[in-house]
Image (cartoon, rainbow, N blue to C red; front, side, top):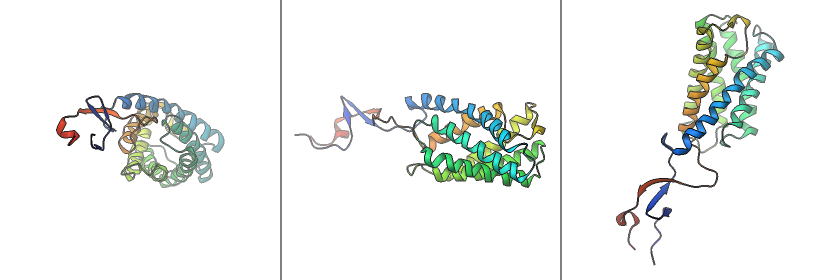
Amino acid sequence: MANEIGAEVIGSRQLHRNPSFRNPTFLSTWLLWLVGFLAFPIASLAGTAVGGRLSNPVSALIGGAVCGVVIGVGQVLVSRRRLDPLIWVPLSAIGMGLGLLLGSTVVDYRTTLAELALMGAVTGLVLGTAQAVALPRRARRRWLWALGVAALWALGWTLTTLVGVDVDAQHTNFGAIGAAAVTALSGLLLHFLLPYHPASGVWLPSRRVTTSTLGPQ
């Protein structure tokens, strides 16, 4: 009788979990995550509607928290069950609220390109740190998420300003162009930190198994 070989084998191919960007599930998972960019403009409208213009600490904290809830819910819905809503959404709200409060205070609510980029970096760092804590235990190098979100939030505000959006209206978050870029890049980062595997546990084709790979019969 054959000895146990320690790997699942179907026919003549050995199967394993493949977290690379060539993984056939990666594209569909990333495209689904891209749909989540719609949460950003909705979050901005909701945050501004509840907290008002981003012109004082109260509006920053309340508007940011509302914005964080909407973004957090949107991300959970397109995460293919990788994110726990009971942890991700509350921490996104806390992180966004505190981050926007700190970021807007640092730049004194001004809306030049450099100041909005700085506000975005500070906001994203606090938000990203909170979300990094919310990532599942199996996530690797979660600190990269905090740094990545900081850079992406700065990018989001930069793109929003460059395309001519009326940033003087002091919205709680950047516009659709910035949101699309942030979502696309954050999807790549999330896949690196937390690759998606089918819930059924099906493993992905790798290399052919030879007699030497299988071991003694």
